[in-house]
Length: 432
Ligand SMILES: Nc1ncnc2c1ncn2[C@@H]1O[C@H](COP(=O)(O)OP(=O)(O)OP(=O)(O)O)[C@@H](O)[C@H]1O
Ligand SMILES: [Mg+2]
Image (cartoon, rainbow, N blue to C red):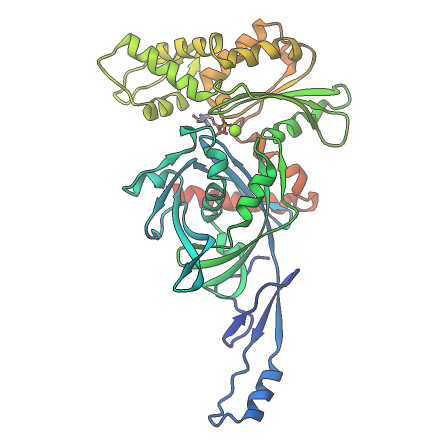
């Protein structure tokens, strides 16, 4: 169980010793009232120091650092806690802001100061709050390499944002804790590059508490939409092959999986860069400008407009910041996106393969209701049988949340549900 905030190993002042391989060992200083400390009594009190062992607690953090959103799910002792989602935006600041979501200090290199090697400390804010810092921020969608370049910052930002971070840590000192993390990433990037970058981060500080970081050797990297493939395993016996179709912010990935073994294995992959929601936003801006160029809507506002758009009886409705319904422009934009962008290549390739094999529809693009409806209509027009389209209630999170199947123990299912409810309530309160 996670240790409570006011729970210490003993009543006396403890001194935390560097963690051993399996556990964190704490030396408890023997405190005496004696004033005349002779060499003998010093030796005695040193030899009397009891060793208290605090069991090391490993958190598994499943993480998908996407171009538009970072998604992370903590799993502890086989229990999955509810996931957090942050915008993929980072900002370096000169001092650590307190009480700000995604804010932390960290060190990943040493510098020489007056002849001594000292930690070079960096301060970062990750997520929407990065835009509040009054200094330049970087979005992962700004450049193709950003997702990899900023991976350690995104990962630490997600860790700093976990609602119960303190309870996941161990240690006898309230301000000096240890975090043992097994990172499970979902990424197209080279796992060794990601691993090397994160291993350089030796500690992080969140709201005045310093966490010594150790990343377990058991870190794994799965293909980006792996959870969706796990979800699609249902009809395993009949289907030796299955596809995932992940419409994200930048890409519209089509991946082919073999479904013969215990777990799916990726065979082929087409990223179709430029086929994601960012392209839809461009088409949307163009369509809005063509209907009424006098009222400009910013791309960030357009993104919100399309995320909340609806479709009823085939009619698209999208409410602009000034209250206008610009559903017609959104419908035109989605149709253009389907017909004339790298999304078209993805649909063409599925036109043949998904006629024979099932395909799981995933990625945030499918959480945009009119986009989901119109892409699905197009797939059916291409002759893909309806029963081959595997849909989910939360397509934006499925690639991450289904990884639970690999790490959550059956025994904990009931407890898991309880914990999840607890967490969800806590999060709702926070949001309120
Ligand atoms: N629940 C939701 N409701 C409406 N729209 C959503 C939802 N979730 C995501 N989206 C939209 O889908 C887009 C893509 O989301 P997703 O999380 O799949 O992208 P990503 O993983 O960050 O990008 P990439 O996979 O290209 O790196 C988001 O930018 C957002 O506009
Ligand atoms: Mg993605």
